[in-house]
Amino acid sequence: MTCRIPRWDTSKGNSVKMDFSINGYDFTGAFDFTFTEGLILDRIVPMSGPFSTATSPLRLIGQGLKPSDPALEIDYKWGPVQTAPLTRTSVSTYAYNFADFLNIVPNNEDLKSYWYEADTIKRVDEPMVNGKNYELY
Amino acid sequence: MSPLQNPSNTGGNLNVQVRLSPDDAEIVKKYGDPKVRFIAPNNFTRITDCDLSF
Image (tube, rainbow over the protein chains, first blue to last red):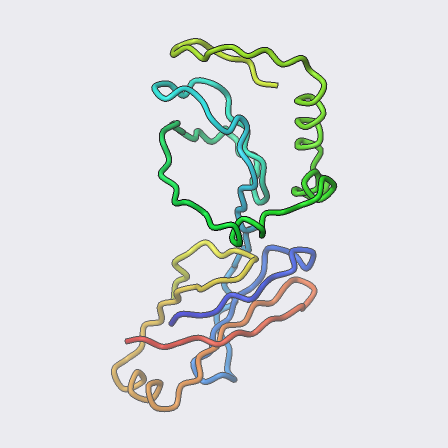
């Protein structure tokens, strides 16, 4: 069977019991079932890096991310991305005002902090060198 | 019966396997109305439809 999962209000509790029925009336099962939050990645910081190394810390900003113990190891690699040209009309959907941008992740101060620091810390342009570690702000 | 995927609260599909006898399978093919029900500890309940495949 392929069943539609309902949108689930997590305030009702994530751990539920799941029953199934083949006639629509008589349910059985009482299986333990846990809803997980959908993973949404809003932004990565930095948005680019050295092509041949991936030693710099990478910050993922999004929803549904949870800390794990032990820490989950995620590998990443920078590289060229092929993109198709966008038409003017398709780009218009990305228009936003500044307040909306800062609240792209509700109740999350990371992006605000990042914006504040990026706007106030003196910028130094420096060519990136393979194998050199760069500190993130 | 076994759920095969980790469900997301944002919706989507869930594959459920139910083992039936050949006779029961024929009845389900003709008259089945498969549904799945989720019940929270506070009895908040959602019931959704399923599609059958054999």
